[in-house]
Amino acid sequence: MPSLTIRPGTLDDVSTVLRFMDVATEWLVSIGRTDQWGAEAHSTNPKRIAQIEGFARSGGLWIAEADGQPVGALSVGESLPYAPPAEEPELYVQLLISDRTVRGSGVGAALLDHAAELARQRDVGLLRLDCFAGGEGALVRYYEGQGFTRAQTFSVAQGDRDWPGQILTRRL
Image 1: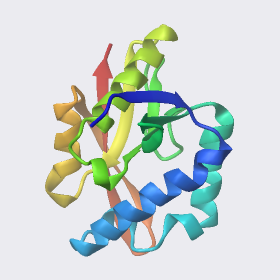
Image 2 (image 1 turned 180 degrees about the vertical axis):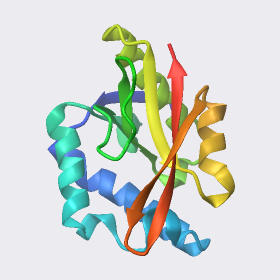
Image 3 (image 1 turned 60 degrees about the vertical axis):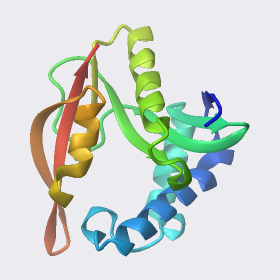
Image 4 (image 1 turned 180 degrees about the horizontal axis):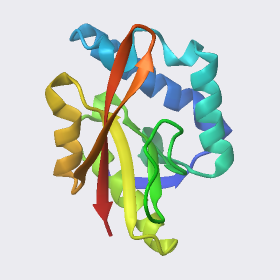
């Protein structure tokens, strides 16, 4: 893959981020993992659209590009409402997603390194995120491979089931 550039995201990038999420959801559905993000498109969900627009408006959205084409997105800022609170100043990874066509190419790792650099610039020593803890823990293991450590678990009620979550931290 060509070298990556990471630039601030804008409202013009919202549809790209939602497309990445839609493609990821289609893949999750294809392997029977509707428990992570459901089965519906994010690009038609008003709450999800508003969330990604909010990330862009807050200045926390970042876009990774290869040869001028978006290949991943990151949003950082305050912890999300369902996450257990931190006990010290932090920068929270609100979203990390890459284009499925570049899976395994290091886009996610580069965006997480960018998040760590943003935290350092703000004199914050803790980078925190949450992820889906189901699916045999594959996503948790990915973040551990990126230098994160498991912290607390939590769950979010979603209709007739609970969504299992894992908070992970990375000291800077």
